[in-house]
Length: 230
Image (tube, rainbow, N blue to C red):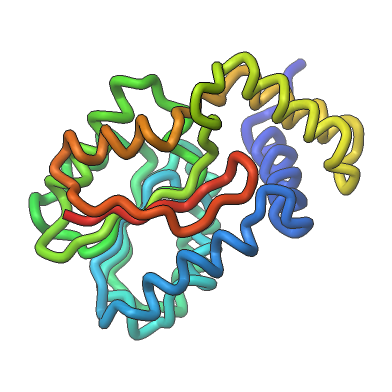
């Protein structure tokens, strides 16, 4: 008998929390780099978070008085239930959607948001859908709006199979904080769900969508943070 969805979620989410706490995907460095963007932004901000998970990262990026409105989407209702609890201190208008990011973006009011943020979610989509996400992000952002993208990206000229081999080798040999079962779980996810682009490809998607300023904020191996502005 297969495990129920709550059990599966708790197991996979628990592994991901270990990845974060041991900084295996460089969340610490990337969060510090992204935080500098918000230090320069006057609030309150209208914020859409694509693939928000439990939204715990927002606590590290924003002060309560910086947030006026938050729209978060994720495919896990269990994660969204945790997100609602984590967002309570902000006292902002909260809208949480159990839906895919492209559908949520297409339903968003044009020119409405100050920030579109996505962390480790875009690489799950096929190439044509990634371009559509950039296009819809540009439509949803108002004047002076910013898209912040945190994701895994292939090295330039690196094929997906080489990326999978090298990343999984790093997980297998360097992620000693995880148990063998947890490392296997991560590697299986990477093989089945990782379809990353090169940074130059994502930059071209952004320019196709109407973004004119594209700036890398941080790079740690395959883990990068970028800022895109119109």
